[in-house]
Length: 243
Image 1 (spheres, one colour):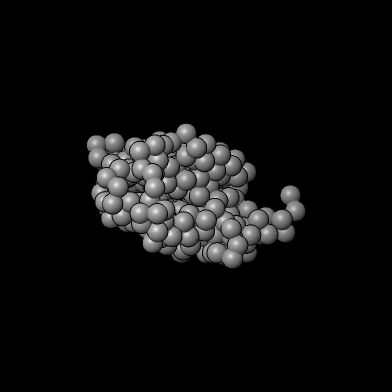
Image 2 (cartoon, rainbow, N blue to C red; image 1 turned 120 degrees about the vertical axis):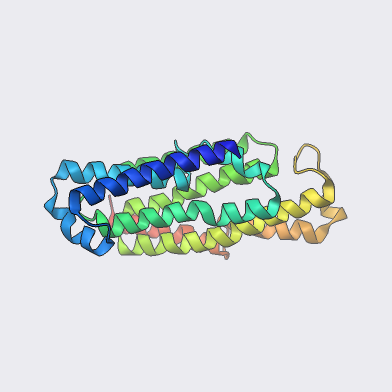
């Protein structure tokens, strides 16, 4: 809880500082007016404002290397609370990045940086999940990995890629929330969420096994589920760019 509060406060301070700098430079915080006046600023000033806002939102979205707080914070909360956190909070950060990238900084893109960060987020998140034995921590690390897919769509930065990113956000909210709620049921039934301790639930609670299995393979991107559609749309949008 303390880690989450500190990280949240730091990101909020950065966000408020960025807003103050935007207001100081442009005399407004209205997004339409900012987008119209941003081109009047020197390129260096635009980049500084861009990086500050991106940094603040990247902490909220748990983008690597600013995702260190998430795997320690989410697994400690009760399952229903974690489900809401996992489903919504990081996506608010991604949504804010979408708005700033597509509205405010169209002429000052950081697409290459976002692409590298997306790749690192995907890899580090999934490697972290492989190293865990506790279901909530596994899901927390996979959450980080899938944030990488969303940032990847933003980095491609075409209308098709942005559309695929928005679809992926909706898909991930539903699937990740469902998985955390299923883990809460496993914890209630078996008394633990450690894969080293919990065994035999397939026979003891077959319905629970199905409730976990279906969203799990959806998260993995197997057809015909929404995860496959989202990943295919992202990679198709990237392939069409041709770089």
